[in-house]
Structures are given as structure tokens and as C-alpha cells.
Image 1: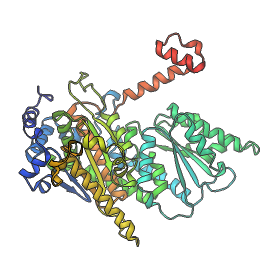
Image 2: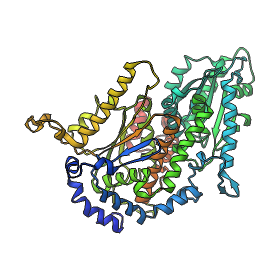
Image 3: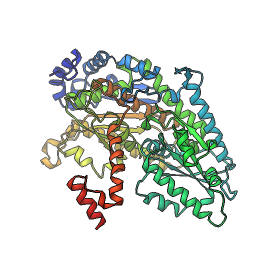
Image 4: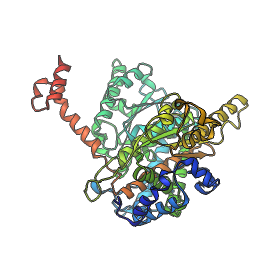
Length: 543
């Protein structure tokens, strides 16, 4: 059966009966020049697909499938502000968030890109005020600690990026210590507050709707902490909030209701999906960590990938190739597990970020035509820093029963300017681990001399498809390119699967049910309308 009802889909199914059943090691024997034919570069980035179970014909057929699914039209609609988020009647304009101010995009008779830059300029003013020590707490001391309170995209993106680019922190008069809080149970925030000085701490409350219960619960605790610290001075609450809280939201009226004055507002728009929002003023913590100049470099790197995605032919287009080879693995080879394996400690939070980006976007079984799909969509993603993962779940990758596709991510160069030969050697050791693991996972013990004479428990079947992504160096620019690469990969796959990647009704349902259960948690006499299991659990909690 042709899953996609396209001619190229039928051709790919036939193709999978031959190439799909071959071992990757045999593909290298048939074509020793696979790397030259199946690796692709753009800027300071290289993607190597030679350890995937594909040939040049596979790439051609996948590109044809993308054409038959009208991918080019969908890309144009994405960039031009068409309301492709149909269930919420919105465009998805994260590409506009990183467009240079020389461009223009009209939406409802307003220039979206100019509005974006007005907010970035406003954010730059705030960042400079912090770095120069001019933002003062209620006692007159400069703020030197900032706590970002958010959840989901309002936490994962800024947290990941701030960690990845820490070494780009600029020298400034006032060093800012940065923390992130997202835990609903309050333990993260309460433990953190014990170590902070309320006179010199400011909180960023990040929420598109400014109604997310997780975020507002932590924000209320932070406000109470500041008030208790000032209980003897009796500073007006309005002044405490003005000196110690900034709101970042698409709902200015709700920020006002909470008490944050408009002078402390940063804005973004309801067409900015949470998992696509680090490029917006949600990125304030990133700018505080790396400075606005580097933040703008981050945007420039993403914009460079945006242009490549929009303009390059599909068979040379990095996001399209990454996406379509994923389609090949999932829908034609039946591989539904995906490991993200960065070999760089600075990218420790990239797997968590991509888990949200991909599974929240494409973890769906209903098409845009409101029909139930009869094929797999988004795989299960997980991952870890490669050298840690080698001592954790690589045993399953090498000798387990599950087929898994793997993305290896590394930087070619690091520590060039260091005087430490040991650091340089460590980087070389790290790269050797990265390349060795992808080699054995793909090729199996065909690369080991006399492996056929080993007992079965020492054999490695290989044939796990691996993509290697190499950045020349990790910089704000190349990091922006990397994240935009994965964003566009997700979009391409959503087009092929005919699903809307920009809503998340499964997430919204969980929030609604939790809110509805809260009265029963507070008052067990209200549990009668619930199912037997939930009634029993709530009764046990109260006992």
C-alpha cells in the first residue's frame, strides 16, 4: 500500500525492498566513494549521510516525493505569513524573528519584521542596563542575578542556548549570574532562593499566554520571597515588582493584571510557537548571557539557514535531506527510535530541546484533513552527550533488538587558542570516540579483523543508520544554523505526513485536566465525578 498516495511513494516502497534490506557495510563495498556522493556542505556545516541505508537513487526518489507533496509551495507559505497553523488560524513566522531589519513582511497591514526589531532594540536597552550595573534592586544595589521562570519553550530554548554559548559571555562592568526555573513542584525554586540575595535578584516571567499555571505558581512564590525580604522596610509592592520583575509575553494586559508595569514588558506574538520562541524576546536570558551582539549573530546564523532552506534545490538542501532521510527510515524501513548524540559538552541540553521540538510538533496521528493516519509519524527521540551515553544506552544501540537511527553532532575545531596540549588532545579523543561509534554502529564488526571468529556475544551486527553533523566551530552563528536546520527538518516532515506541526492539543488537554482536578486535590469531598483510579489515588493522598 502506498502510504502517501504519490507515485514516488510507490517507487520508494519498491526501492526499500532492495536497498532497504542491504547492510550498510555492503553499500560501502559496492561504492567506495559514498562519502563524496552522500555528504553535503553549507557554510561551516557538513552533513554526512553515507552511513545511512541510502544511495543516490534514494535521494532522487525522496526529492521527487517532496516535490509531489508540494513542499515548495508550503515553504513559500511558511515564509510569507499564510495561516498554515490552521487549527489556531495563525501563521507560523519564526523565520521573521531572525530576518534582518532591511527586509519587510506585511501582515494585517503591519510590517512584522520592523515590529520584531523594535522589540529587539527594546531588549538591547534592557541588556545594556543590566551589564552596566544600572538596573537597581529595591535597596539601590545593582542587580547581579537573574532567574528565568518559564516552562517548555520558554525554558528549554533559552536554557540550552545559554549553556551552549557560555564561553561567548562578553566582558562587562556587571557580571550577571543566570538561573532557570521550570519545575512545577517548587523544589527547584525554593532550593535556589536559599542561595540568592533578594536585594540583587531579578526574575524574568516568560509565558506567551501569561496564564500557564506552572509558571505563575513559581512567579507567585518569587514575589512572596521578595516581599518577605522587605517586610521591615515596607517598600510598596508596586516598586518591588518594578525593580525585580520583567514580563515577556504576548498578553500585555495579563502582565499588567499580575502587577508588572508596562515599562518592564517585552513582547512577542501569538504566531510564535513556544518551541520556536528562543529567537524572540523570550531569548532575553540568552542576550544577558552572551550580549546583544552575539545574540544578533545567533539570529544571523538561523537566517542564513532560512535562506538556504528556501532557495536550494531539494537534493542539495540540508534541512530537506535531513527530513527526507528521516522519512525513509521511519516510513519505509520501519525505524521509529531516534537517538541524538552530541559529542560536545556544551550541547548537553540539545537532546531535550529536540525532544520537544520534534515530538510536540509532529507527535500526531490526525491529518490536516481531519483523518486518522495509517502510518508512523514522529519517532521517539532521546539522547545524551555521546561519551556519557556510551556508558549508558549504547549497549542497546550496538547489541539490542531495536533498530535506531542516530544523529552524531560534533565540532571539528576547539581549543586552537589554548596553551594546553592536554585540552587539544582531549578534543581529538572526543572526536575519535564520535567517529568510532558511528563507524561500528553503521558498519558493524565488518571493520574488526577476524570478528567472524568471535563468540556471538562479542559480535556487532551494525546496520544502524547514522548521520554525522560537523560544525567547524561552535559559535553563535553556527549554533543558530544548527537549530534552524532542525526546525526546518520538522516542518518538511510535517508536510510529507500532512499534519499541522504548530499546535499541541495534547499538551493543552493535560493543562485543562490538571486544572479541573485541583479542586478535588484541595477538597476530597469533590471526587465523586472522577474515575475509580483517580478517586482512589486522591483518597490515598489525603489519608
